[in-house]
Image (cartoon, rainbow, N blue to C red; front, side, top):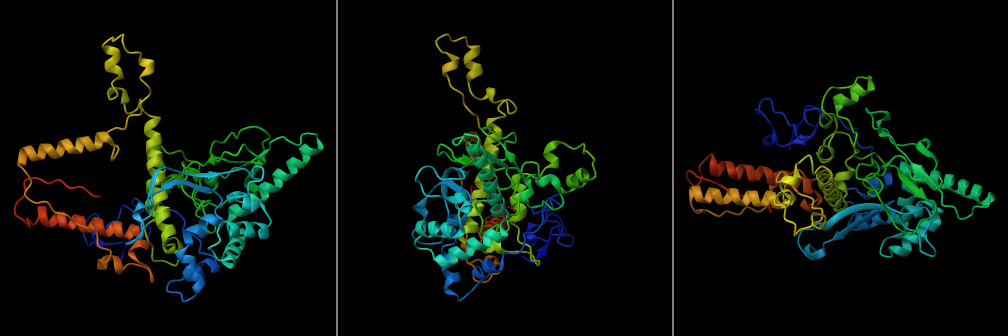
Length: 464
């Protein structure tokens, strides 16, 4: 994996190219220079020391073995997902979840006598926050928790934002107390506009904390609204919020860099917006999609940039699952709210029921169905269509002659040669996926172009 993209310097295998070997082009990392994101800042010295490969320090080994729990103890928001533990208990580690995934946050203060959690800990005195984290995580080392907490207070920009927000909430509470309204719920809105400088995607500053909004909802639906107290329900974050990832993966984003957001412009669009020019391209062509953003971030670049994201072990694997779930949920959200666009009424049978004038059926009682079109991968219609295509091939070419299974091997030299020092294949799932895809293409080429088993009349394959 030694071929660099000429635009973003991402490393590739030569067979990932488009075009000739003499002049290879690698479009998947940056869409041919249409996507330009700033590199991550270097990890703070403490985190870099704990992530150092092949370290003999017992604290470093303990940290890497429990990095997910350390991140969970220090994060601002909770991770709402149902973890599937059936794949654990031997073999290569695999992080697996079921159902939807959400990041959620609570009020500035705990309800009643409940202990503080997540973002509430950043409103406490550091020593009190340390004691609460130790109580909740007795198997973690107190010294590491304390040092990481102090590190994030200094480096993570959202820790500074939350501290300032709590000060604003306290001032408003004192003002209400003096006015005879001690029980009034007050709120503060954390509004970050990363479009202020499209070239650098600036990190937020404390000056971007908005004014107090007493007892009203935010007029910006993606703002983080903190209440001094609530009824105990957690508020979900939108995946298009630039703080969606850095507020949970605080050890992967120790400086609080922005994640993906809805209006993130492509490189040419950012230049035109900066110059005040309005492009004439379609909306979907001028913005960086969520999938393209994560694809860019998950390509390794061998420069003097921060590599700590790729060194987070099991936390890195969880981050990839989270990113994929976020992309998938956004696709499903679009389909749910664009049923007319995909003409779902042609699928769901309501038109047929109305056309038949069947008075025995009340259409209002038929419910509202969300139709997944065949263009959505793994949807029932997509799977049924693939099955019908496969049966058509069998009817045309006859019954299959060869049933061949190919399994990914973590010991493939293409994987082992490109791991960072001290890593295993489980630490780099994005590398394993890329190598497997290249091997799959090579197997298909040998069979269908080199006629390894003779001339073929048809083929069907699936990836599990």
